[in-house]
Figure 1 (cartoon, rainbow, N blue to C red):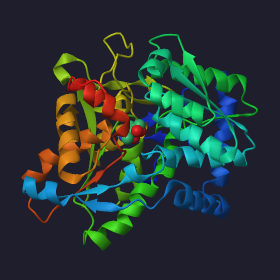
Figure 2 (figure 1 turned 120 degrees about the horizontal axis):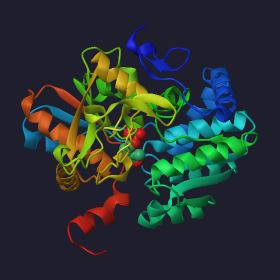
Figure 3 (figure 1 turned 180 degrees about the vertical axis):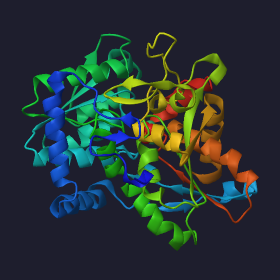
Figure 4 (figure 1 turned 90 degrees about the vertical axis):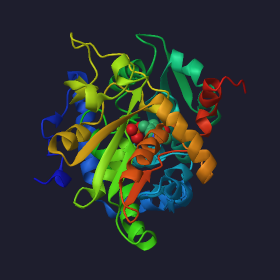
Length: 399
Ligand SMILES: *Cc1c(COP(=O)(O)O)cnc(C)c1O
């Protein structure tokens, strides 16, 4: 099997992925697997997905030459794939939309989701409003307090936000609560997971919905940049925007794939979220992958200035791409990401998400080491309007 063909029928990417779930969930997961199998190549399903991506989301997103930044760095040409221009401001809606269309085909009228920073919750609440579906979003109570504008957005869109008070009161606990809901209400409920994690078929399905990013890039780059990129860069939290742009490029052997994780306050401080570079193999949220854990196998607290990268696991396909050598992984600190955030605003007129700023910071390190005729394509996963409070706070400014 070529890396491109993964996963196998049971959801394995080499030794990673699979289905690790309670017996009570197996029926729901199996129903999902069979339904996705039925529709993934169905022409009507694909046509509707494409129509909605075009008319509701605003695709295709452009590729853009970051000319001034490239000139300043004096090396390779940096291009952006503009996922920030999607409706709701990031790549996440590609996936929420795809899963909502599948839920409709399955006759499920109630949608549940978990969210940390609230971005996946907003994307899911948006598609639920679009299709008139009930939407319940689980969110750790600490996150509810930290992310109040996104909580209000979800409510405006008609969703119910359920604050989760158990455990560390963040994303991990929201996920457990969503699983509990799914078991209880499996007859009428579809669980929209927000990244390339979870039990099979989620990592494959979410990747497939996002692979529109890479497919568009493959058509656009020869047209506008005159060639395919030498490097494709993307930030990695759970890994969905990265898989979306990486996957169609896997057969393009001259294109190097680089994922950028959050080094937080510095790897040596232990306050980071670099699961691939510094985690160990374990099982988290239904699949085998790299997990940040302590000596006793307890999942560690993670840290990143960007809430979307603050996850102790990573999608199993990234674990496989890392081991097979087809992709490599780097990390960038909070401070480096913030510096690139400000620089991108001022030199390109684009306010990037803090997550995205990690990939930008690595691009700015890489470009000067390469000749001027080389091309780096960065997946600009989202816009940074959501992050202005965090950025202001770090600068000691009260908005
Ligand atoms: C959620 C988010 C991410 C991180 O999630 P992935 O699944 O790793 O893509 C990155 N960028 C933006 C803008 C996000 O909203």
